[in-house]
Length: 322
Image 1 (spheres, rainbow, N blue to C red):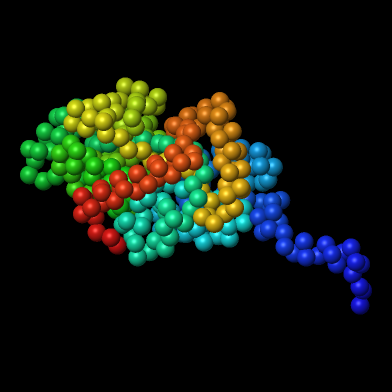
Image 2 (cartoon, one colour):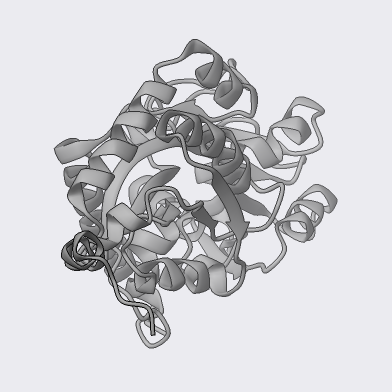
C-alpha cells in the first residue's frame, strides 16, 4: 500500500478542514425562482442572474420550482445547505404573507429562515373593472354603496398580496367588494373584460395593455408615484379617498439563513453594483418594473414592517388561516 510523503501527511488535515463555503467557491450557484418561465418574477431572476454571476466569477443558473403559490420553492431554499450555492428570488407573498394565511402548509419562517441580500424591483397593482362601470373612483365608491350586493372582485387567490390590496381598498375607501379567488390570472382578466366579474386586482404589467385599449376600466395604480406605462392613471395615494396609500409587490434576493456572512456580503455588493448600471435599470423598467436600491439594514426593516402590515390586513379582513 503506497505511503504518504511527510509533506502530504502534514497537509492532509489542512485540506480536510477547509471550510465548506471555500470548497464551494468554484461551484455553480442555483437561483431558485418560485414561479414559472415568463412570469414577472422569472423575468427579474433572469435579468439579475448573469449580472451577479459575472461579478462573482461564478455561473448563476435560474431554476424554476413551481407549486403551492411559490411556497414549495421557498421552503426548498430555506432548507438548502448554506454553502454558497443556493440563492432565492423571494416575493412578498412567500416571504411575508404565506405563513399568515397557510400556516399548516408553510414550513418555514420568511424572516427567520433567510438572509436578505438586495431588493431588485417593485411592481404596482391596478384596480380594474368591467367597461360599463363609472369612470371616476369617487363615483365607483358611491355606486357600490347604493347597490344591495357588493361588487365582486377577483385576485390571484385567497391571502395573496393582490387579495390583500383589495381588502385594503375595502377598509380605506369603503368600497363594497366581495372576493372571488382565481387560480389563473388570464381567466380573471377575461371575466373582467366580458363583465362576468365586476372588479379585479391585477399587476400593472398584466393589465396595462387592456387599459390602454379600453377593454377594461381602471381607477388607480398602487405605487407611490405614477407609472410610465400609464402616465395619466392617478395613484391611490393622490386620491382623497385613499390619500397616502400605497402597496407594491416586489422581488428580492435571499440566501439560506446560515449562509456565510462573507458570501452574503459579496453577493450583496455584486447585486448593488449591477443595480447601479443604467443598462440593467433600463431593462427592468422596460418590463414595467422599478429598480430598487434597498439592501442591508434598510431591507431588513422594510421586511419586518411589511410583515406587520400584512398581518394587520389579514386580521382586519378576517381571513381564516388554512
